[in-house]
Structures are given as structure tokens and as C-alpha cells.
Image 1 (cartoon, one colour):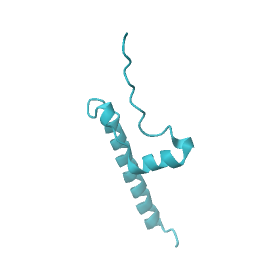
Image 2 (image 1 turned 45 degrees about the vertical axis):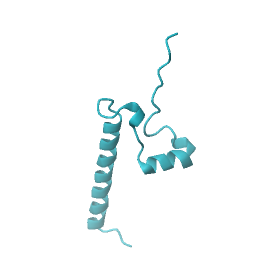
Image 3 (image 1 turned 90 degrees about the horizontal axis):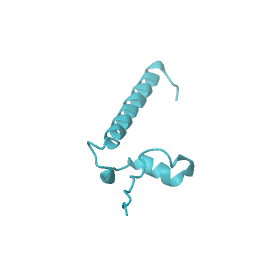
Length: 71
């Protein structure tokens, strides 16, 4: 398969679109006014990456902090 100018532009457009969707999803998920911390969910491919590649476990959503009792 030869990479033509048109196919390079199409791939570039797809990458930009996919990146924008990914950014928007995580911007919404990380906003506590929109999604409560305990109801946040990972995208399926991020969850798969975190499970299968230990070096990538820091990407995506962070675990919600559990409030401690003040006793």
C-alpha cells in the first residue's frame, strides 16, 4: 500500500478527530460538577492498556479519594 497525499490527510484527520473525542471524554469525566468521582468510567481501550501494560497504569482516570473519618 502506497501512502498518497490524500490518504495521509485522511489518516491525519482521523487522528485529530479521535484525539479530540478522547480529550473531550476525559475532560468531562474529570470534572466533578458533571460526573461524580465514584461514577467515572474509563474508555475500553484505556482500561485494556492499563491491565496489560503495567507501565501505562498511570494514564486515564485516577482512583477517587476515599474520605477518612475524622475520629
